[in-house]
Image (cartoon, rainbow over all chains, first blue to last red; front, side, top):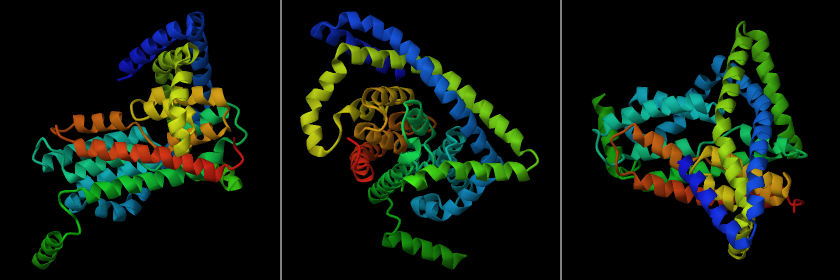
Length: 208
Length: 175
């Protein structure tokens, strides 16, 4: 994916520079870019070190697990088809909680494991089940409590208040995630709040 | 609102300090996490270098300006700063490409301009859609997941509009 990006950006700029007559600037831009990228990485390094350390402290203290337990109430509504499977729900909750706290390296393995289990539940069919769609959407629009990269880059660029964007980022991600979840549930094949589903739930309770 | 935002970070740090002061091995956890964060940053350097070089070329060639100029009549009607477009295009595709686009934008317009603030909100509240979807579904037998991609794309477009609107609401003074 990155290879394709690289190729297209380079070819477009090559063609454009010939058209606009900026060919001489092109070569020096490469050197500038290399220097910039190292400068940027260095300014990222300290911040990443501090935040990843802090996040690991929280994870170690069991914050991710605690948050996951709090979240399971909402998540049961979002994943009605597998709400009875505590194994899958646990994976999903841990993944979302880790994502919220900014530990994406911990979030991905949980999400992948949940995805594999959902696949088995789906009978390894070739069409994504409702829960799989919801989970993949949750994975790519998750609520972030602290956007480390954004704040660090703003700081590195000399912003007066690098943290000023925290509140709008939170609002934006909450609204966008809710919107995606809503769309996913509205287009789901198995409507969770449909009459049939309720009936079957009622029957299950009776049996119990 | 700004005091609230700037107090968030010290609060988190104090909370971490509290955990570290009480737990026996909590500082070890900090060291472990810090080392991991540095490793991640180091492993990002090669792809970041390639993409920042490419974007720097794009800027020098005049293509970025051309794109901005071409799209600005439409975008200004919709209330989106045209400088955000390179970021909006790269954001769903690749994390390092969007990081590069974001830092190029910060350098070009300054970190506290309206375009940069809108970009920061967009960058913080959306994720690499195509990459995440590809990774998630690669672990399954699913071949048809069009619904997920369509909803994701609709969400990404909405996120762009919303970040522009929020940037205007929260930062009225920014130009």
